[in-house]
Image 1 (cartoon, rainbow, N blue to C red):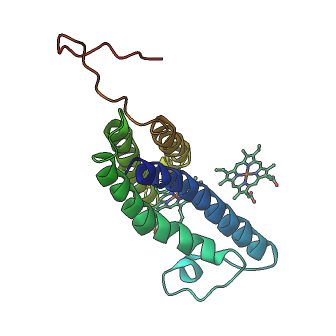
Image 2 (cartoon, rainbow, N blue to C red):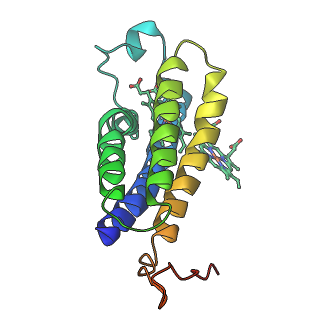
Image 3 (cartoon, protein in one colour):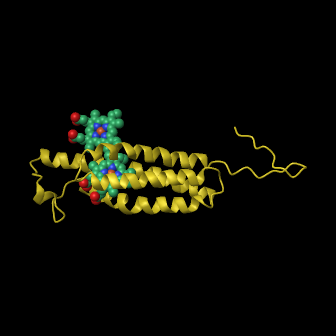
Length: 159
Ligand code: HEM
Ligand code: HEM
C-alpha cells in the first residue's frame, strides 16, 4: 500500500502540472483569438457560448480536473495513507487534502473576487510541493519494531 500511496502522491503532483498547462493553453488561445478579431463579452463567455479557439478545451479540462479528478485522487491518497505503514504518510496526505480544499475554494470564489486568483496560482505550487513531499517521505518502509533483551523498545536511529 506504500507504493500505491507513493504513486498516488506523484499523480497529484502531475495533475497540478496538467492544471497549469491546461489553463496556460486556454489563456494563450483566448488572447490569440482576441488578437485575431474575436470579441469576448458576457454573451460569448457564458455557459451557452459556442465560441471555439485552440485552447478552449483547456478551460474545460481545468474545471473538470479541479472539481472532480484531483479531489478523487486526493481522497484515494488519504485513504491509502492509513494503510501505507510509513511514518508521516497520514500527516502528508492530510496536508495535501487540506491544500486541495483551499485550492478548490479559491478557484471557485476567485470568479467573484479576482484577487483570490493570486492565491489560487500560488497555492497550486504549495500543493505540488506537498504532493512531492508525501511521495518522497514514503520512499522507505517503516523500520521494523525492534525490542531489546529486556523487551523494551530499542531506540530507532533517525537519520
Ligand atoms: C497550477 C496553477 C494554476 C493556475 C495558474 C490556475 C488558474 C485558474 C484560473 C485562471 C481559473 C479560472 C478559469 C475559468 O474561469 O474557467 C481557475 C479555476 C479553477 N481552478 Fe485553477 N489554477 C491552477 C491550479 C489548480 C489546481 C491544482 C486546482 C485543483 C486542485 C485548481 C482548481 C480550480 C477550480 C476548481 C477552478 C474553478 C473551476 C470552475 O469554476 O469551473 N486549479 N484556475
Ligand atoms: C503556473 C505557471 C505559469 C502559467 C500558468 C503561465 C501562463 C501564462 C500565460 C497565460 C501567458 C499569456 C499572457 C498574455 O498573453 O498576456 C503567459 C505569458 C508569458 N509567460 Fe507565463 N505562465 C507561468 C509561468 C511562467 C514562468 C515561470 C515564466 C518565466 C520564467 C513565464 C514567462 C512568461 C513570458 C515571458 C510570457 C510572455 C509575456 C508577453 O508576451 O508579454 N511564465 N504565461
